[in-house]
Length: 315
Image (cartoon, rainbow, N blue to C red; front, top):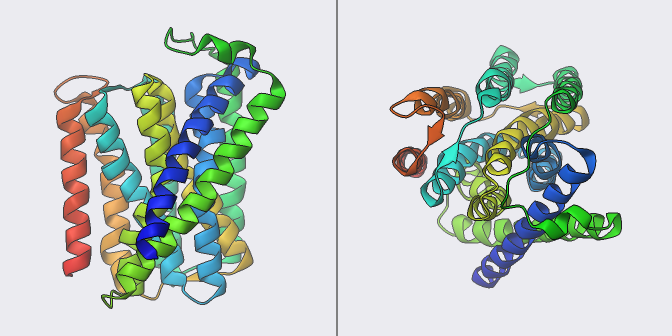
């Protein structure tokens, strides 16, 4: 039954990714926002929904390590696995705005999470409120910047999306969100059942199996976007999802139920991997080719993620 859940989950996630990309591009045309911004908002929030539900449920049930491991592991997977695979499929061009604005914001949230957790080994309600307020301020600045810097539309955009009705656009978004939600649920349930049979710890399950499961929406949406040549949307989706995971997922979870650190490995190993793999995007963006993530760099990211997973499983 677990294998059936995993297969159905994969199918739903691929379908959900397709509908999310369609609705995101259509919304960007209607609101005159750049595809990068749509990736950082609409797609990122929808694909972060599985992380939110999993982390919240885990915290309420007393499995706080699963809440933290889910988000931290998902952020590592988004860059190492998802961005790596996406770059291997189709080399990504990096917008300078990503380096000047989006990447620093992601690093700021990542480092802030480390200091919040390391200070008292708990993410408190007040810290959750601060994270949620920070993401709201970030979104306001993001939208204002987008309206001041309109982006030219790529030729690859389906012309039918320019005249898609509001009803159809909303329907696509709803279908995509629901498919991603139920697909993630089925995939995570199946993966956890299989992992539990081998007696793997709560933290290891969360940073590997559950993290990959909840990152499948990002993988589906980003790969489909890359194949369609919507490269700005693909990169924006991943960076936005990492920001949303920390600020909204853990922020909302901590407001409802403070999240305690139970496994030392989360602070001594996992969170350093999350910060490190995010930091390495800058040297990769400049060396050897500027503003480009090619197939070789994608292979290096996937290799780094494979090493992290093997370390977690064998450690």
